[in-house]
Length: 540
Image (cartoon, rainbow, N blue to C red; front, side, top):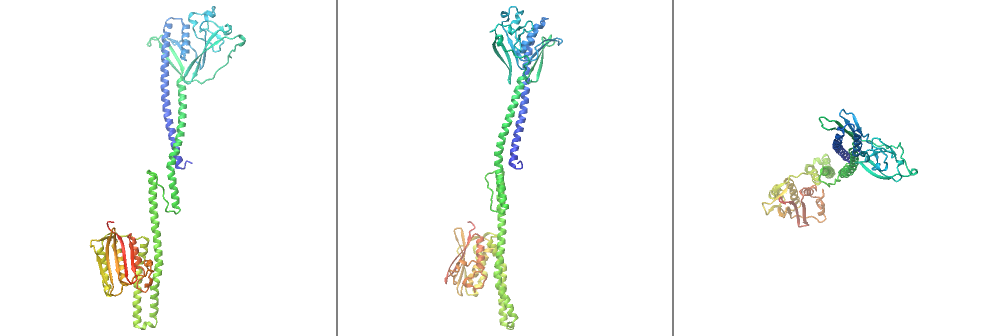
């Protein structure tokens, strides 16, 4: 499960959260423990100092140990601690005894009135008398014992009970009455309560002059409030840590889903592409690093598709070249083979026949040379694999470069070859060498199919963002049935006896299409033809 990025992110979220909460908890609990311990110790020192001030006059009057004992027990009850009063030599003078976790006291405020024979001093009347078992009423120093069963039924007495809570000790006052003998419930002597104890702290305060004390008050107490509060804080931090871990888990799932979903989607797109689907693309829905990755993948996929497309086009062009070459080369090769066979026979003795065969062989060889020079280039043009050297070229210069070399051929056929250019500044955005080749093919075709005394005119004009290079002739025109096919390779129509290979117009169309232009033909039988190459203007 943790091999995926999503669950690694979730685990890291939870781990960081738990580590953060843990560190904060340890630091906070440590500071809290130190603070509460310091406050409790300060509180204990204040109590010890108060007891020391009360013990000072009792210490100065020797032999009053009962009063010291009463002071220790009363103060211990009120302060919920153990108090020991020591002499100057640290000898024990009074001890309140160990402070239990839960204490109960019996208070009889009017002992003298109910028991006039009881020998107690006035100082003992309002004393707190300990009796954990609720059986005996014992004055502080054990001077007398009065069983509760000897008290008259209905006698009211008060029980003071100390109960520990997480926030300290609480005193509970309960008013009770003595029941009849047969109704009395006596608490068993052996009842005990097991409770946990907290670490004890001890402070000692001098009695009298600190430089020359006459005794000491030693106060020891469990760190109840601090320990209980610390335990509560620990539980709170534990719950907070669990809650934070749960929130981190949910947040991690949401964040990891938002991060891993596009990566998973991109992986699916990669699988599709590896299976051969080069048109698939990744969805770009965000502008972060993942979005940049998807965008980069799409650009790479587009380049790969273009490269594979070029390779496929090159392969198709090569296949078409081979098919066209095998088709076109068959005729001249067959003719050459026939001439060669004839020259081996009796015709070789006839000089006129021999010269005719040689001239025809030269024509076929020229045809083979032209085919080998242009057929592959035509296939590459059709496949869009030819890189054009585009530049701003003067239309007049292109026309002149084509017309001048063909004037002698036109004159030999008594055909008038003219140029028509209304704007001498007219220019066209093109690959000059290839446009000259295309225009030369059009003029050459016009000269072939124009009879003696005819006219061929080459010109250029602009229509908005298009520059048109055109060739008009006064030839026999093109049959309407042939017009849809004149740009097909090797198509010769009704003029199959005319010289040529049937590739000229196909080359013209391939060159013009490579420039993003079009070739338009307007021809009527007996009225001549008009071929127009529409090319983009430089400022288009």
